[in-house]
Amino acid sequence: MKEQDSIPKTAGLVSLFADLCSQDGSHGSAIDGLYLTRFSTTEVPRNSLHCAVFCVVAQGVKSVLLGEQRFLYDPEKYLLVSLDLPLVGQIEVASRELPFLGLSIVLDFEEIATLMRELDLPVESARPLPPGLMIGSLDDDLLDAVTRYAALLRKPAQIRPLAPLLRREIYCRLLLSEQGGLLRRMVVDNGKVQRVAAGLDWLRRNANRAIRMEELAREMRMSPSAMHSWFRAVTSMSPLQFQKQLRLQEARRLLLAEPMDAGTVSRRVGYESASQFSREYRRFFGAPPLRDVAQLRRSYLPAAQEKLAALSGSPEPL
Image 1 (cartoon, rainbow, N blue to C red):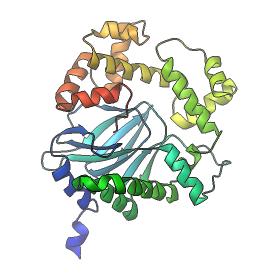
Image 2: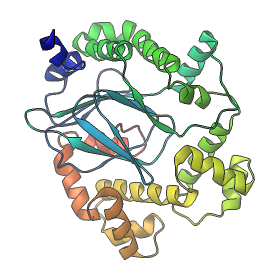
Image 3: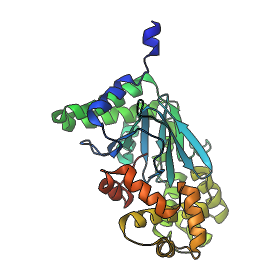
């Protein structure tokens, strides 16, 4: 009995990585929206997240930063991000003997909304609005569904008929979990969360120019005071902090994609001071611009092209 207790509950998922993801890096898969990540060291650049996503760790520990808040997740916990937030992830525990192994599933809110209606799940709209990110306990049933979903990669002929069914099961278990309130609130029609999401999208499209809070409030169909309150409740940041992080992530994408110096890039994303840009970039990504980009290219090869595509707008999971 003691021997069984010593076996980690994610052992089945860990064994899949030996066949499916033997090289360090973040990799797409034959299942649309499913990504696998493996790293044998913590000495890798911080990576960015650009989508709503569900993340599970098979082995190791990872953290994400949302504004000034740091969240840790490991094989006992999952990460759920319900909005397109400017997050930065960092591997905290990894080694050659026990590399970090992670799996990410991009969320489809239309499918989740359909499932929620079918299940006739209530939404307690009077409750305080949850943040756009949360850490939940990874129970055995949810882990089993995730493991079976990833195991389809071993049997490509089964992906087309079975992947939608297993993804639906994963969504169902998330909705029915004790932390499912966040997902439910995200799909309520005409809710304040959707207004915040519209504001995030507007900020993303206008990240490189000075903005007035009245403009953003109009876009979110709220008063300026309500806009600030709801924006911070969901994102844990002020609109200006959010805009700054968007600018830094766009700068990183430009530095990876084009041969430009840091000063040129800083102006492209809306900074007036190159020195301020460099200071804030280093604080956010952990290294000065050019050094960070050089490390990123080395660490994520041979998947560099895939990551460039992710940075340019497609999801890049944590």
